[in-house]
Length: 289
Image (cartoon, rainbow, N blue to C red; front, side, top):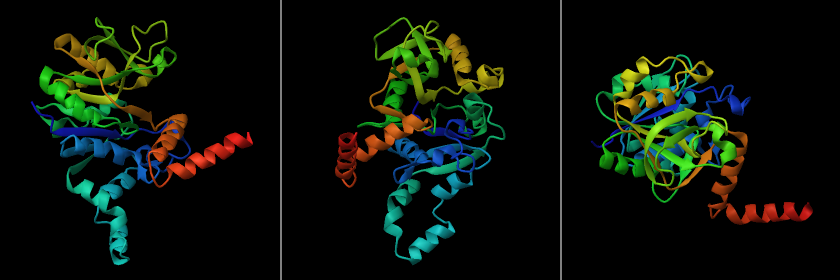
């Protein structure tokens, strides 16, 4: 079955980025001249998915305003002859429909996905975390959609991480330690180095069968008192195949201060209008010690 819908959870508190995220939603933190969530939406649209469901929190108005081209600000730009500056965004928004679904309390990624149940129905859905941006020659969720159509069951986007960082992620246990698409035996959420069965980490991209919704309804709160998608996926893996696919591309965690700094530098170096000046600046800093 073709993947036609995507959920983007965007209601998290963004505690790692406080105080910047006290009033500004974490997905609206800028990556140069675009907010993080715009890169995620671009990935969805470039993968051929046209229905987007954004799970929003208490300070969601900025997200809605960003993707709404009927705001007072847009009218002011038109009157000032500045429409060209936002044409790329207008074009993006014209290629998808946006539905905003409130999550009254930040109860975890699993609960955020469950909030969209009535909108998804009996079909697979892509889930993309809003602070993970993946740069590559082909959209990550598009790669995963091909694998889903081939396998016919849930696909998790994954890459291998340094063993010292396995405690930050959901880690895959599989019988195949080297394959690019492996059958998941079990997922462990943020294990210690000693607990981890591998260093294959799930990195914020999922295409999930609709059976997940019934499982999420009966999944109790797990680590951190939240409904963890990892717990629900483990139950799903007992009922049907769940695959982990090692996607191509570079993933950036823009919900983490160092991850944001790393991403900002690399994104700037890819820009013709910024790269030379940035390289010169960094060289001068290195020379100055």
